[in-house]
Structures are given as C-alpha cells and as structure tokens.
Image (cartoon, rainbow, N blue to C red; front, side, top):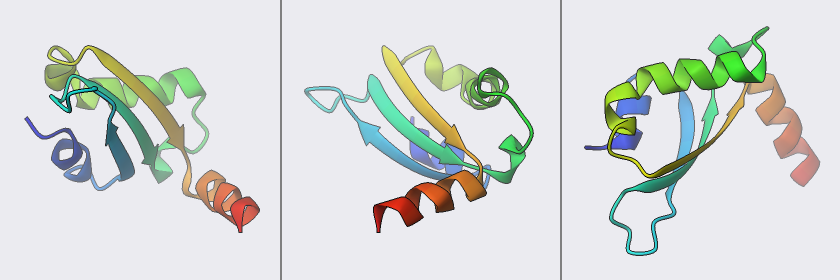
Length: 81
C-alpha cells in the first residue's frame, strides 16, 4: 500500500516519513495540512485522517500525526525563517 498516495488523493498537503528502522512501512510520522481542519479540534482532525486511512492503519504498527490548517502551517513556517 502507499500511504502518501492515499492521502494525496484527498488533495491534502502532507509530509510522510517512514520511521520503521528497516523502512518496511509499518511506522510513520505524517504532517497533514488541510483547510478541512479549520474550526475543528485536534481530536476531530485526527479522526478525519484515521477514517481516510482506516484500511491502511490495520497494517501499520505506529502512526504519529500532526494536523494543521494552512494558516497554522504558514505561521509555523514564517517562524522558522
């Protein structure tokens, strides 16, 4: 399965890192940026991503996610420059 393609197919901005020591795709860190997150609390954002990836998550050992609105992402990036 291809986790990045699954999320990208939803037109969400993202960054995916395979954190499995052997890179066998069982542990991931993801950053998802979407306007769909506006006005939603963190738990609801995570549930949206989890619902989208329900089938893939059955095969993943560890899944760490950060979910930001485009405005939050721009603010973070601005602070890094």
